[in-house]
Length: 138
Image (cartoon, rainbow, N blue to C red; front, side, top):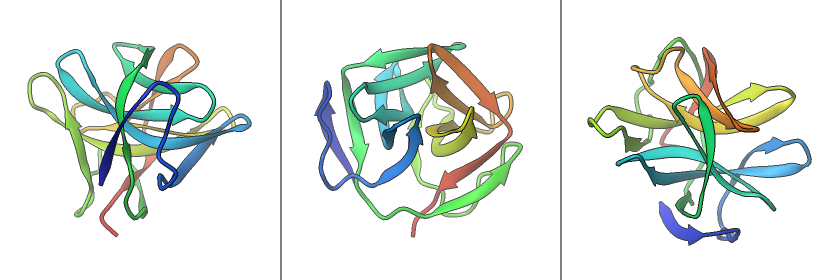
Protein backbone atom coordinates (compact mmCIF):
# COMPACT_ATOMS: atom_id res chain seq x y z
CA UNK A 1 0.00 0.00 0.00
CA UNK A 2 2.89 2.42 0.75
CA UNK A 3 6.41 2.57 -0.71
CA UNK A 4 9.31 4.57 0.67
CA UNK A 5 10.86 7.23 -1.51
CA UNK A 6 13.18 10.21 -1.31
CA UNK A 7 13.85 13.38 -3.24
CA UNK A 8 12.33 13.51 -6.70
CA UNK A 9 11.72 9.81 -7.43
CA UNK A 10 8.36 8.06 -7.32
CA UNK A 11 7.34 4.46 -8.00
CA UNK A 12 5.99 3.84 -11.47
CA UNK A 13 2.99 2.02 -9.96
CA UNK A 14 1.76 5.07 -8.05
CA UNK A 15 -1.66 6.23 -9.34
CA UNK A 16 -2.08 9.84 -10.41
CA UNK A 17 -4.47 11.65 -8.06
CA UNK A 18 -4.57 15.20 -9.40
CA UNK A 19 -2.70 17.99 -11.13
CA UNK A 20 -0.99 21.26 -10.28
CA UNK A 21 -0.76 23.47 -13.33
CA UNK A 22 1.02 21.23 -15.93
CA UNK A 23 2.40 18.65 -13.44
CA UNK A 24 0.83 15.42 -12.16
CA UNK A 25 0.07 15.10 -8.42
CA UNK A 26 0.38 11.80 -6.53
CA UNK A 27 -0.70 10.63 -3.06
CA UNK A 28 2.03 10.78 -0.43
CA UNK A 29 2.55 10.92 3.32
CA UNK A 30 5.53 12.15 5.28
CA UNK A 31 6.80 12.38 8.85
CA UNK A 32 6.57 15.99 10.01
CA UNK A 33 6.50 17.65 13.47
CA UNK A 34 6.34 14.25 15.22
CA UNK A 35 3.32 13.13 13.19
CA UNK A 36 2.64 11.46 9.84
CA UNK A 37 0.89 13.81 7.41
CA UNK A 38 -0.89 12.96 4.14
CA UNK A 39 0.47 15.31 1.50
CA UNK A 40 1.23 15.70 -2.21
CA UNK A 41 4.03 14.71 -4.54
CA UNK A 42 4.23 16.92 -7.61
CA UNK A 43 6.04 15.39 -10.57
CA UNK A 44 9.23 17.34 -11.33
CA UNK A 45 8.97 19.34 -8.06
CA UNK A 46 8.98 16.97 -5.06
CA UNK A 47 6.93 16.26 -1.95
CA UNK A 48 5.13 18.95 0.08
CA UNK A 49 3.35 18.91 3.46
CA UNK A 50 0.96 21.54 4.80
CA UNK A 51 1.35 22.46 8.44
CA UNK A 52 0.59 25.51 10.59
CA UNK A 53 -0.61 27.65 7.69
CA UNK A 54 2.39 26.98 5.43
CA UNK A 55 3.68 24.52 2.83
CA UNK A 56 6.97 22.69 3.51
CA UNK A 57 9.09 20.61 1.15
CA UNK A 58 10.17 17.25 2.59
CA UNK A 59 12.77 14.79 1.33
CA UNK A 60 11.64 11.54 2.98
CA UNK A 61 8.13 10.29 2.28
CA UNK A 62 6.00 7.37 1.19
CA UNK A 63 3.83 6.95 -1.91
CA UNK A 64 0.43 5.28 -2.00
CA UNK A 65 0.35 2.37 -4.46
CA UNK A 66 -3.11 0.84 -4.18
CA UNK A 67 -6.52 1.04 -5.75
CA UNK A 68 -8.00 4.51 -5.94
CA UNK A 69 -11.64 5.30 -5.19
CA UNK A 70 -12.71 8.80 -4.15
CA UNK A 71 -15.88 9.81 -2.29
CA UNK A 72 -17.17 13.40 -2.25
CA UNK A 73 -17.40 14.90 1.25
CA UNK A 74 -17.77 18.24 2.99
CA UNK A 75 -17.53 19.78 6.45
CA UNK A 76 -15.47 17.13 8.27
CA UNK A 77 -17.21 14.05 6.83
CA UNK A 78 -15.22 10.82 7.07
CA UNK A 79 -17.02 8.00 5.19
CA UNK A 80 -16.86 4.32 6.06
CA UNK A 81 -13.78 2.72 4.49
CA UNK A 82 -11.72 5.93 4.46
CA UNK A 83 -8.02 5.07 4.35
CA UNK A 84 -6.20 6.15 7.50
CA UNK A 85 -2.89 7.63 6.38
CA UNK A 86 -1.41 9.30 9.42
CA UNK A 87 -1.85 11.19 12.65
CA UNK A 88 -1.02 14.42 14.42
CA UNK A 89 1.53 14.47 17.24
CA UNK A 90 -1.28 13.96 19.75
CA UNK A 91 -2.71 10.96 17.86
CA UNK A 92 -5.64 12.65 16.06
CA UNK A 93 -6.32 10.73 12.84
CA UNK A 94 -5.51 12.04 9.36
CA UNK A 95 -6.93 10.72 6.10
CA UNK A 96 -6.02 11.24 2.44
CA UNK A 97 -8.10 13.78 0.59
CA UNK A 98 -7.97 15.93 -2.50
CA UNK A 99 -9.62 19.23 -3.36
CA UNK A 100 -9.93 21.67 -6.22
CA UNK A 101 -8.21 25.02 -5.77
CA UNK A 102 -7.08 27.64 -8.28
CA UNK A 103 -7.71 25.34 -11.27
CA UNK A 104 -5.74 22.49 -9.70
CA UNK A 105 -6.67 19.20 -8.01
CA UNK A 106 -4.34 18.71 -5.02
CA UNK A 107 -3.96 15.96 -2.41
CA UNK A 108 -3.70 16.75 1.29
CA UNK A 109 -4.91 15.79 4.74
CA UNK A 110 -8.44 15.40 6.07
CA UNK A 111 -9.37 15.34 9.76
CA UNK A 112 -12.38 16.04 11.93
CA UNK A 113 -10.22 18.42 13.99
CA UNK A 114 -9.11 20.56 11.02
CA UNK A 115 -10.92 23.89 10.80
CA UNK A 116 -12.78 23.21 7.53
CA UNK A 117 -12.13 19.53 6.79
CA UNK A 118 -9.15 19.41 4.41
CA UNK A 119 -5.78 21.17 4.30
CA UNK A 120 -3.73 21.15 1.09
CA UNK A 121 -0.23 22.48 0.46
CA UNK A 122 -0.18 25.06 -2.32
CA UNK A 123 2.55 27.53 -3.33
CA UNK A 124 3.94 28.13 0.15
CA UNK A 125 0.61 28.14 1.97
CA UNK A 126 -1.69 25.70 3.73
CA UNK A 127 -5.09 26.09 2.09
CA UNK A 128 -8.16 25.05 4.13
CA UNK A 129 -11.33 23.98 2.31
CA UNK A 130 -14.69 22.49 3.28
CA UNK A 131 -15.45 20.52 0.08
CA UNK A 132 -13.18 17.64 -0.86
CA UNK A 133 -12.91 14.01 -1.88
CA UNK A 134 -11.54 11.34 0.45
CA UNK A 135 -9.73 8.15 -0.55
CA UNK A 136 -11.64 5.00 0.45
CA UNK A 137 -10.94 1.29 0.17
CA UNK A 138 -12.00 0.17 -3.21
